[in-house]
Length: 161
Length: 260
Ligand SMILES: Cc1cc2nc3c(=O)[nH]c(=O)nc-3n(C[C@H](O)[C@H](O)[C@H](O)COP(=O)(O)OP(=O)(O)OC[C@H]3O[C@@H](n4cnc5c(N)ncnc54)[C@H](O)[C@@H]3O)c2cc1C
Ligand code: FES
Ligand code: FES
Image (cartoon, rainbow over all chains, first blue to last red; front, side, top):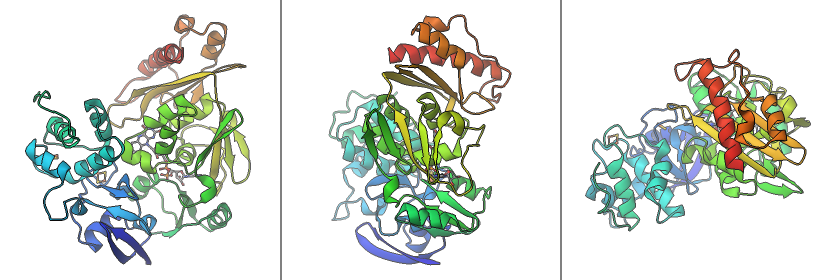
């Protein structure tokens, strides 16, 4: 076992991990942060997306040991300081961007990474950015709409298909 | 996954020393290796994480060549732009999260027959720089998942001569989004190079007839009389050998037109 220390959602945390411990396992099982979902565990679905030093990564495809010393942000850290939904989360609710909600943490974390680099993405850019986030429920349309709305763009013209 | 130790060297000297240990294996971005370990298809005693090796990071112009550190991510290459066709290729690998971790050294060491970077390296006549030596791309790729790398040898950088014009055309396999067929074409003062990925049972290869024809006449119609034999092409549920052989010509033509 080796000791790892990292900042998770602004708080310093540490724990003992095996070499093979995934970042997703460390967050969920050691830290109790079960908002990071594991949909496939084969690097395909994106339900486990978190930010490591600001970059979106699949937490099921990174070792906890590699995140030693890093700044990690998960869905649990996304709400506003008063506990209300942040602008992306609120837009998902307003535009019906989720059904079962399983993919939603990864969708929100990917959306946050996109909007940080590209504050006003086109619809095509949003769809391209979500290449690695799979949703079995919504058909993506309302997810794309929610992200466009969260970026402050008018989405009234984006009709349901 | 079987358990293993993780070592995180900060310098190339430390990484080389760590790789000398028994059953040590390099860890790049882990975007191929971690899924492989999960399937228990490998059982290293120790992973040597290369992401903290300072000498292996970054991209720099070196005369007419672009030198990319072996631990540089696909995302960093996509954002670079000094070699536009190469950046465009990197931007088409996987998805943003995969590109934030996966590295050029890992991709070239793995040499997946459907991977994108092998086409760019072979199509550009790149030089693969390792802990021991420099290997010309023409000598480096030795068949599916096989390279000239020795045990413990690390890809520390890759040097790409920047061409006058180049283009990568990727026909995506609909499930994996890897290349069903990908063609990288580059035009240099001394000739044209055409490298094909995704298609052959032998892994990435150069299409010599197209290189010669395009050297005489750099237009898609120069390929009209050519055909690619289907003998050694991959056949699977996504496309039979004859389909892949056909796609090689179609994608090469598109690459010529797009490169201008
Ligand atoms: C969902 C998904 C989609 C993908 N889509 C594509 C795609 O469209 N096109 C494509 O080309 N690839 C694709 N990939 C693969 C991706 O590009 C990987 O990043 C790449 O193949 C391996 O790079 P890595 O740095 O992650 O290497 P790792 O997974 O860490 O390692 C791979 C192998 O290389 C060895 N290795 C790693 N670094 C070095 C080094 N510097 N020197 C020597 N040996 C080394 C390791 O020991 C291991 O054997 C995809 C992957 C995923 C998960
Ligand atoms: S759980 Fe990580 S990509 Fe699906
Ligand atoms: S809302 Fe159910 S998987 Fe996306």
